[in-house]
Amino acid sequence: MTEGLGWTFDTAAAAYEKMRPGYPKELYRAIFACCPVGESSRAVEVGIGGGQATRPVLETGCAVTAVDCGENLAALCREKFRDFHNFQMVVGNFEELDFPDGQYDLVYSASAFHWIPEQAGYQKVFSMLKSGGVFARFANHPYPDKGRPELSDEIQKLYTVYMNSVKKPSEYTAEMARKRAEIALSYGFCDIRQMLFQRTRSFTAKEYTALLGTYSDHIALEETKRRAFFAEIERVINFYGGEFTLYDTIDWELARKP
Image (cartoon, rainbow, N blue to C red):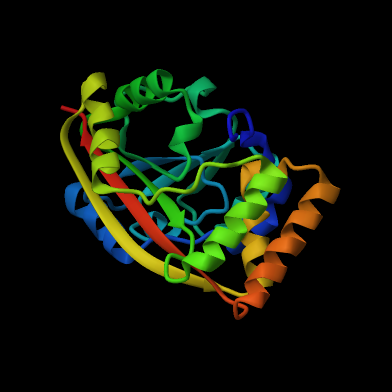
């Protein structure tokens, strides 16, 4: 359902920045252990979104060029990181922009690289990196409240009604991460690594529908239908105690240019 919906995020830039989560400190420690960066380093962030993954890299002193196709998200991030002299924002589709070959120590992408055509994306990253440079790709995969299956089942019924979705969500696995990590081998990368991180996040009914309002396929719903859908979700959550928990699995894949 999300194919061709990358434009939607820019229509909800402020909500996206507020509601989308960041990433664990351990994830950045893993990146920097494989790719130490500092004031003499250069990095590109592919798909900055609301800047959830940007600050830890900027704080190393590394020069970060962030890319996003959304004008509103770009404006938000320019303001958000205005105090960092080492931050630059570029608006456009990553695969269509010009970057010099062999000039970057790190290219990374947080919950965004799946929007880019695989071959074009990997080939471009490979050409941009210095020899020994690193591509880090990571993403958050939320799974609905498995501690209360009856609540999740009731919400799934609403997805069938409002979004014609009969497929139940599946929890992200280490095998999925392994297969994703190995994609880079086809494009000349080596030293493939992977890791999973786990966490939970809890929401009130209103908070949860605010989060859903930053998902591309939900944003694309006709407004009256979306409001009715969200009202029903809130009703169900409140009926079951007023709280909904997401079980996040964050996959991290790293590949090095020989």
